[in-house]
Length: 229
Ligand code: HEM
Image 1 (tube, rainbow, N blue to C red):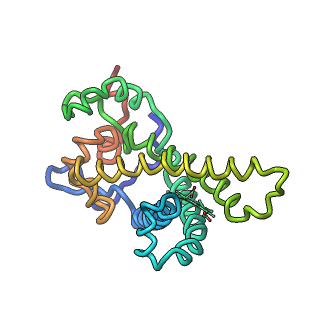
Image 2: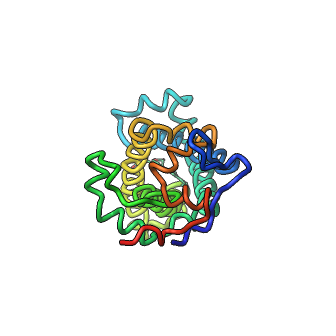
Image 3: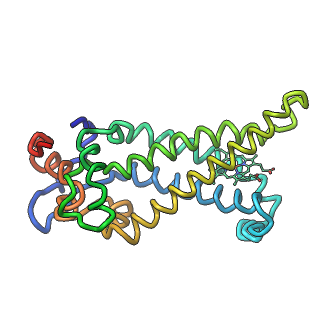
């Protein structure tokens, strides 16, 4: 197992009822910065995309204001994604534990967590979401800059303009799909996940239930060898 970014602290304890530090303050701040930048781009982007959703622009000061700030907030989102990449890329690499988890995904869908193979700090689904947002923001950034300075693209190369609109919308829709699932999973489905990204801590029981390999690492320093295929 290759999780390299293991968080531990003086508060870390394996005792039942004890708490484990899951996200440092810096991780939480960057997560929420990314969230708010993305939310702004989402609201304003949907307003630009369809007249049915133009009313959303009224929530953020009207159409011209939204058009002015959308690309700047987009840059903010790209910067926080870069920061999240710096913090989490090691933890987001696919491991053998992920492949075992993926094979047993039917238990996850059926809410039968007892029969799921143990996972590290992040499970395979969380990793897919991370990489979707990572590659999504690269496409949004490149195509978004194209749309921002669209008049600089010569008419002879107008296919680039069409390409920029198409890529921007497809990448936005793909990330929106992931974002909806992410919000649902971390607020409604997995209890305790939301408070961990606010307060930083989870109970030892929560860690043991949802991320057993990570729990073992932070509490005892053992590895995934305990869980043969
Ligand atoms: C990463 C940096 C980003 C930049 C530089 C950027 C820039 C732009 C620009 C300049 C436009 C054109 C507005 C117009 O029609 O005049 C646009 C449209 C749009 N943006 Fe972004 N954007 C970025 C990120 C995002 C993100 C994160 C989303 C998330 C959902 C998003 C969703 C949209 C949508 C749906 C449209 C409407 C496309 C259409 O009307 O066909 N953008 N963006």
